[in-house]
Amino acid sequence: MSTQTTPNSLTALDPRKLGDLHDEYYPQVYRYLRYRLEDERLCEDLAAEVFLRLLEHLHRNKGEITNVRGWLLGTARHLVQDTLRGKYRRPTTPLEEHEHLSNGATTELDLENNQDHQRVRAAMQKLTADQQHVLALRFTQELSLEEAARIMQRSVNAIKVLQHRAVDALRRHLEPA
Image (cartoon, one colour):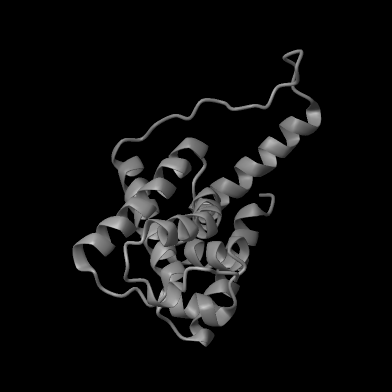
């Protein structure tokens, strides 16, 4: 992790340090959100909200954040959970989103990829929140077991078991009936 902002001891509201922090961590936060949610624009909004909450936290508390990456991903996780809870209260029907070629036609491969993507997304939604979280941390963020354990406040062995169960459950949900 290349960092010019010493994220393990963030206390100052230095705009330059905050800009560097945003530049470094925004792609990771967005990738985590995108792994958990389908809506690209919603992910952009939530990623921005994560950084707004960071600023509010620093301004209000002026306390130290010892693990900035963990704090940001933890906040992103809470926003995902809030979003998913809201969807259960107000179910929506997503519009079909297909990438079209310049002539307006969709190739068979595009449709197949979209169907596969939708199957994986649907299977992910069947996992528990912790299972989704551990898969997002391990595979989108490429965190080590130790880093994921620290962020999720669990032991390394608990993360191993959780990841194994999540992958098995995902595989079961993706198997043809």
